[in-house]
Image 1 (cartoon, helix red, strand yellow):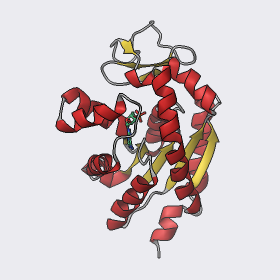
Image 2 (cartoon, rainbow, N blue to C red; image 1 turned 120 degrees about the vertical axis):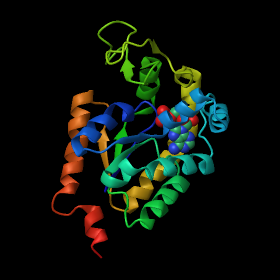
Image 3 (cartoon, rainbow, N blue to C red; image 1 turned 180 degrees about the vertical axis):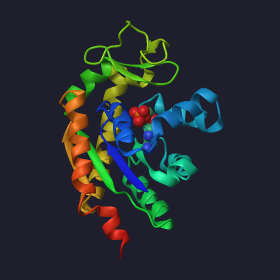
Image 4 (tube, protein in one colour; image 1 turned 135 degrees about the vertical axis):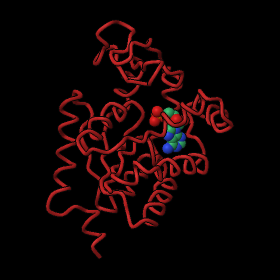
Length: 230
Ligand code: AMP
């Protein structure tokens, strides 16, 4: 089982890069934001609770997201091959809970990849981010536009701006989410498995850098395997 944690502030490109890494490793993507948005759309109790935080750009409380995300991680498909974790963990408490859950099955986070982008570029990017209404496929009207304006290339559904991508909400999200993200990065840096890539580059060079970081640490000494051998 290969577990990759993909870290980055909102708008850093996690949602774009996660499927690329998933194809490279042959594992699924588990995206906490998608999980929460599905609950909001379905109108479940969890969705109603999560929506109160998400629409204000705030993090959903740890106990709520930890429970639903770890349930998802236990899913058979993920348990067999591993997963790319997109958007989780976002706080040190979530990182500790994830470590504990994986340790129960003799697993651990193998790689933490951090896509770093300066704050002002993130704010500008998110103002031009759009997602498709049907499946959340991500576009950017400036750097990654769809072939037909306002229509998803993959499923033809209309492109919309997420309510939490409006500039004032974006700044609130950054103020609230970047400090705990740095703590999560430190958590994995201390464990010796953090690799950072320059997220200001275009999409393909960022993908290449992420894959190179994965392959560099999956070769001779694969951190997880080496530790599991003890
Ligand atoms: P994302 O699509 O990853 O940007 O997530 C959208 C929103 O969902 C975030 O702004 C948070 O409100 C919430 N969210 C997603 N993942 C988490 C998490 N791991 N912990 C707390 N809140 C989260």
